[in-house]
Image (cartoon, rainbow, N blue to C red; front, top):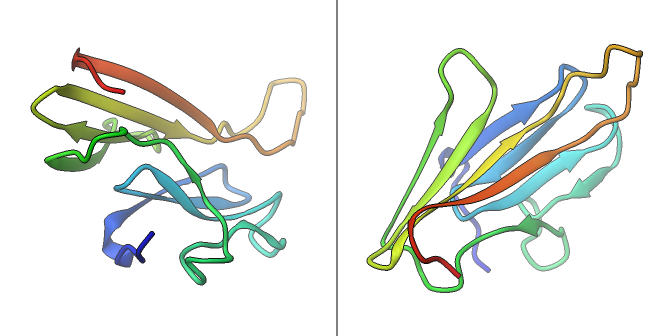
Length: 117
């Protein structure tokens, strides 16, 4: 892999920590459960040893876009190609009503049009 420029990342968070989600579908930075905790994924600092969690199409996308659902911290990364359009939706829930303070990253994969592998 190669380093993505910082401007090619979106941020998701739960008011206790954040994760950087790259336009290539990878989570390149995530400290858990708090901002000052050790990093779980640190590819933004060391591409070889830092680690990442990535969901991306097998074939190279011709274009990539990231956007947030209006007035939310829900990030959509969209992969556009001749075969179809796929997207990964990422967010971090703030916490359950029962006081659950665990940190979760939710990733939803969807094919919007065509076929994506």
